[in-house]
Image (cartoon, rainbow, N blue to C red):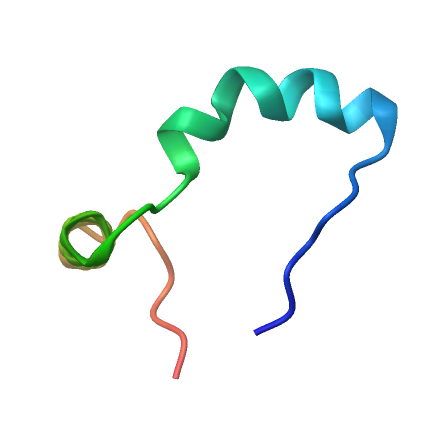
Length: 50
């Protein structure tokens, strides 16, 4: 996986505010994120992409 190391300044302002909500730091948080995404698909809030 390629890591993004530099953000344009206009995006960096917003990213610093939402990064704690969207950054997965460990395996437990990864599992929780997958469970939440699966729940969104179950509720038909996300398209089913295969």
